Every structure is written in C-alpha cells, then in structure tokens.
Image (cartoon, rainbow, N blue to C red; front, side, top):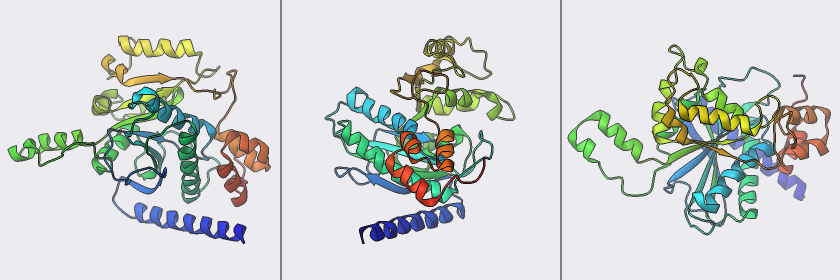
Length: 329
C-alpha cells in the first residue's frame, strides 16, 4: 500500500509540474517559479531576502556535482558569507531550467517535464543536505523555468519578475515622483535581491565568450549584470580546463584587464569568487568524475550502483523507474 501511495503522489507531482510548464510556455513570461521546496523553519516563499543563489543548468539529470555547488554556496553563507551559521537570514536557491539552451547541442535528453520532476526531487535533497551541513537558517529552493537562452538575459528576467524582493521599505520612490521612467526602473532594480550565480569554471568561460553576444560580439552587455550581481565559480581542475593554478592565473588576467576580450572591464573581476569543490573534479583531474553524461550512460545501462554514485538516491531511483535515457545518444 505504501508503494502504491508513493507512486500516486509521484504521478500527481509530475502532473502538476507538467501543467505548470504548459501554462508557462503558453504565456509571455520570461521567468516563473513552478514549485518551492522549503525547510520546516522556512518563512513564506515570497519573503524578502538580501541575496538569492541561482543554479542554472540543463539538469539532464541533476547530479552530485550540482549538489556540491548548492552545498558550497549555502554552507559558505552559513559560515560567514551570509551572517554566520546561526543567522536567521533566509537562504534562497533557484534551480533554473531554460526551455532553450544557447550552448548545448541536442543529444540524449529527458523531456522538460521529466527534468522538472527530477529538479523537484533534487530540491528536497538540497534542503536535507543543508540541514545536515548545519545550516540553521531557513532554506527555500525554487524550481523555476525561463524562456531565455542567454545568461545575461536570464539575470535580467529574474530581476524584472520581482520574485525576490530585497528587505527594507520599497515605497513609491523619489524616481517615480520625479516622473522619470529610467530612474524609476533603476530604483525598482535596487529593490530586488542580489543574484549570485553558481557555476563551474567551464561555464565561466562560456559566459565570457563574446560569440554568445551577437551582433557586436562584445561583453559590454554584461555591464548591468556585473554592477548588480555576482558569480560564485567552482574550480574545474583537469586536463581540459587546466590546473587550479592556471584557473587562478586566468582570474588574475581578468583583474588586470590582460585577457583581450572585447568589452571586458577589469573591475568586474571583483564580482567573481572562486570556490573549492570537495570530491568533484572534471575529467582528467585526480578526484571523482561526476557528470550528467556519465549519469545518462549509467541509466542507459541500468547500472544503479554507478547512477547512485553520480546522482542522489531519489534522482537515481526516479530515473530508473521512468526508464529515462534508454535511447542512444
């Protein structure tokens, strides 16, 4: 009976997410929260927060590498970046899935609604991990979607959605009273939470690649993002991306302005923080190799032991239960 009840609950959850996704894709919205998973002590999901962490990925499927990024961020906030482990300041994390992807070619992909269900399960795992790591502040994890493929546009869409108000009085604002539309928009942007985008070194290189910023092919479009928000980047040491020292050297070149990237401003480097990731390294490194590609291969082979090494238990179980990734790459 318990198994039947669990299956019914899972089906209901998937159906609700599927309907929410359909409503989003049929709308003109660029960003929408479809579900929020909170710790027992979390306040109302819409409560103000000074900053929100954004984990933007294809989640195809979510892996323990994604979990490491989330734990690193929430743990860092608890340890000092957000006021100490005992702080009551809420921690807010967004798991963001784009309905179109600017960088990745088509391959073996689970349907969007299936990935949303995986994200919802993964969100519960993140909340549980934060509690196990000693994060005593309220934690809320949002499962969200965007129709935009590019990083800078996603950040702007989150701001404009006003889903994450910053603490403090909003009021009508002097800009609105002055009747100046541009100043009013700037005032409204100051009233939303600071975004800290969680990514790996490999994705940092994509973000700073001018080819994604046509037609000028310049990073000048990142100005508003770096003036307001920040990147928290996990090292990816290994043959493909270089050693940790080489990645640090690249950040130093960003700081000095010696990278030779059109539109780059060296002061933006202060908005990029490099973080250690425990037990997760890219292929060619000396640590564990954890990637969505390896997880899909394990799922295709029906290798539960390997899949559970790469993904959380709840994600691995649902992938196998649904028979995801059985098709050839």
